[in-house]
Length: 424
Image (cartoon, rainbow, N blue to C red; front, side):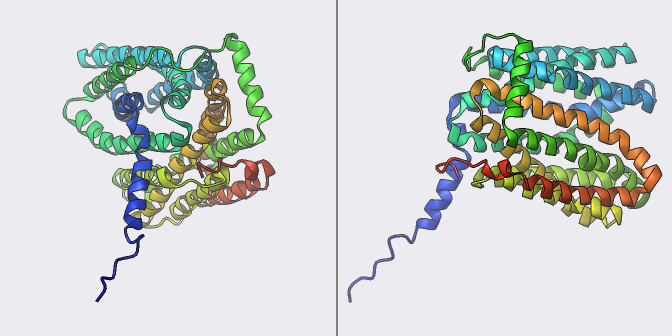
């Protein structure tokens, strides 16, 4: 009998899978991106250690929640005030140089903070001053970093690159939560902050190995650069609409959940262990979202990101009930996943659809919208609960999620933003 050969495409599924995996890790083929990715991962691990360590350092020092609030504010305030300046600098000067300087500043401030805590010389005003300086470094680092990625990988690999960076942040956040708790409990918060300082030094070492001048610099001054960035955002309807969406979502959806979630957990779910489990599930969802968005290339990225934002709604609804912890962890996985997908698509859209010398400034405007809105939402959450009650406020968060998404999808510019055919 004649031999019956298998169809020519019998192995196609395996080949397709191999191609998808290759696409996910394609940015890592570039030596410079690998170096940046390694430094970013180390720094992200340190960043995830610091909030818990600083919180317990202040509580061990003074025991005052008011003092804790002052120190937390000192970490956020310079980022809010200086983000637009950082964005203008990121398009004016070599981005690698700005990031390297910011890492060294943060290494020094966290190193001094750790030394003060370990020697028992720390005072509250010292911690506040050091956190202000460290926050200023972050304000310059973040916009430059978004612009730097465009110089390290090809445009068709930008979404995969942003996804890989998100995956590393989510992964090390999960590891750092456990590490920070162990370090604080066993040897004190000073050692946890010392580890964070070393991660900034490690990040700087990897940045130092990148080419000295990445991306052409503009010649205009910083103030003119800030104005140019604001004009660029205003000129692109899809971008200012997206910025508005992020601001409203942070103020009236995300921030109230961050305030009321621990409150509900303490009253009804058994306290800190329950909220910790929900937080770990949220980070795990971010990891899953990062993996998913490395492979998903929607033709209309803004539409896709807005629809994914609806996955935020189940978490406030279940907190309002309140549902059992296992149901809340599932909702937290969905919420964490949507945040990463939304952020990766938004960042990639800015990188692909704007000229390179506008990327850092445009990103800084969007970032500022979210940063200003978050503390506003946190400040309003308490009075809203006093006036309306916890359950109505949480259900209101879910309703705003749906209404905000529907309203934003009515803007024609949202639908006109399309990916190039070869990237979709």
